[in-house]
Image (cartoon, rainbow, N blue to C red):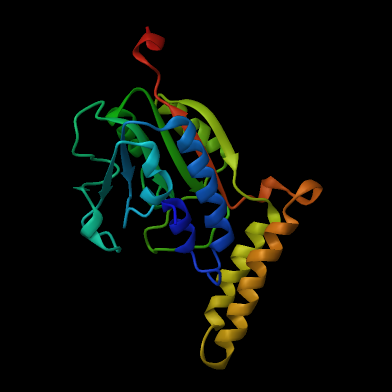
Length: 234
């Protein structure tokens, strides 16, 4: 089994975020295959599972997370924060950060720091939510429109290559519905709730096609941005 296939196997089909995370994983992998190379920094790496998705496109995967990270810390290479990355300027060829920006009190400051450690011409790949429930409280601060994301990245000096909606209305609704149903997943109801979430994970993405797809209700965005090269900046 290939590494990226293992990544998708890690996502239980009865998890309410299954469809969304699977979509995001496919898009992250696709963009990394086009834009990533060399040395990669993952900001908010957790268990570094994203290495299964993009590891084949880079020579080194350096994972950064904070000391109070709620995940297994054994895979973390650098302890720091999105505001204070313990590396010199221009240390990395690419930066990956998924589902982190909503947990940052000062997203602009974090993007400025990301640009600092990225080499000229290097690429940054981020995901950020638009419609998503409260999670990891109380450290859940923002939701982003595509226009807000474009502003923040440009303010940090990035060239925005692409901002992509990762779902339409139905997938977003299905995910929210699944997360809501989880509160009833106990005792004899557990099997029924799991079945309903599993069904939603298959049916709602199928509906999210053609004329029915409305990306104004996307659950999250994917951003691909580049730090201008030295030559371009002259």
